[in-house]
Amino acid sequence: MPRTLVTGGAGFLGSHLCEYLLDKGHEVICMDNLITGSKQNISGIKSSNFRFVNHNVSEFIKLDGDLDYILHFASPASPIDYLELPIQTLKVGALGTHNALGLAKAKNAVFLLASTSEVYGDPLVHPQPEEYWGNVNPIGPRGVYDEAKRFAEAITMAYHRTHGINTKIVRIFNTYGPRMRINDGRAIPNFIKQALTGKDLTVYGNGSQTRSFCFVSDLIEGICRLLMSEQNKPVNIGNPNEMTIQSLTDKILQATGSKSKIVQVPLPEDDPKTRQPNITLAKTLLNWEPKVSLDEGLKSTLKYFQEQLNSS
Image (tube, rainbow, N blue to C red; front, side, top):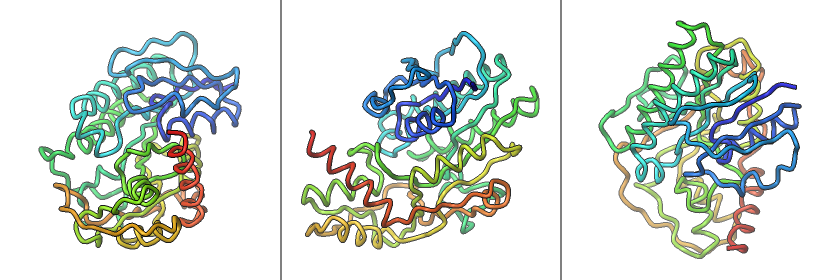
């Protein structure tokens, strides 16, 4: 039975990963300090092969026994979170990644880093292939997340080249689905919450900026295919179906039946104007591409948020 550590395992993506790996026969250790994760996300996991450890990975990580895989997902990931927690975001990207890589070296474990499309910044190349180096403002308010992940990629490759660690880097594009927090602040949870509570939908700028939304089950499948592959360089995982934010609000209003109005607010500093993954590498190397349509994914996500609002 493979023994696997998931840092950030009580978060949105981490909790789905824990479940997926348990279903694939892994013993899973979920490590999280619950700064943005929640025990509610893992409350449904009853397996005897699952263990939760409350620990901040920016501090030294000590685990007894062998480890086969380490998936490093610990980090604030929403703009609301990393603007409120800028130093913690930088520390987990730098110190947390260093500690997780040190553990991978000590245990001779395969290491997978959760990176992000934010390494491309406000891109000047569209769609974004892995070869693109990005257009990032290192001293802007979003720089704490962008540069934390860029550093994390650099140290991951350094450990691969210097110590021969079998490392993987997934660049995750906008993902949505059940277990996102209601107050997450990203587009889909924000609009769904506003629509369900009868509030105005707040669109940054004129809504012409584009995003691509990948349902969580598709993303987890892609990540795990990468984990088991021979690829060591970064791979984009996301849905290339690009749409404007204005189009997204229309879909959410239609799905919820809400009569909410759309209001425009100023664009945040350094907000990307476009975001669309080039997934040629994932298709070629991993035989992966997303399958869940936005309409289908929104139904599942909407149901989850309705349940959360009803229980709060």
